[in-house]
Length: 225
Image (cartoon, rainbow, N blue to C red; front, side):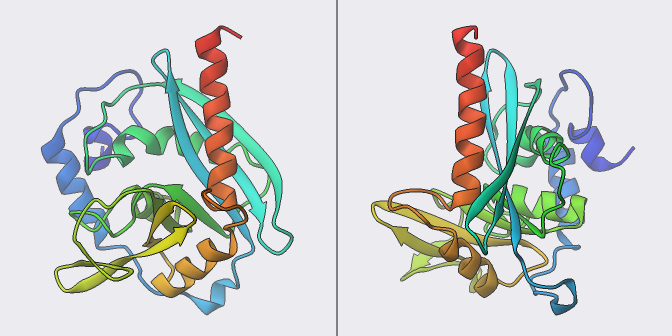
């Protein structure tokens, strides 16, 4: 059993979260992150947004597949798993990766990239949930967040240890922090997020669709529907 499994990812039932083991797992897996785009993989057209909402001790993972050329949602999927790990800043993947992966696997088509509600390398150990999912699933990934987790802001850049780890986009009244997850450059990640901003004061379309699907599922449980 690997460090990630011992820390809680992939386990069944409730687990006792071990932050020390989770931290070591992140440090090991962070070595696999690629910050460059690979032209041999082709351009990114199909993007799956991933988000999670909670109700009644359940975690509702949602995936929404969007065709960026047509800016159209092709399919959505929702999964429901037991809520197993508490929220701890810096360890979001150990709480939400399971529900996200479960929803992603329900999609019929495989995305060219995933867009995750959370950070990528803009993280204390350069391995946020977007990087975690990208490495584990071997898929290009982008982190999109509403707030900064680490570093300092210099104009539209987030700087950590002298390096730009995220870029800030302004969509109406909304600040969006974009970071590399895995297998993509920051410039390309920002370009994809910018192209998917179809509504003012809203998240990029793949994430907005996933957010609405996850929230609707959680509300249905809360209402007893």
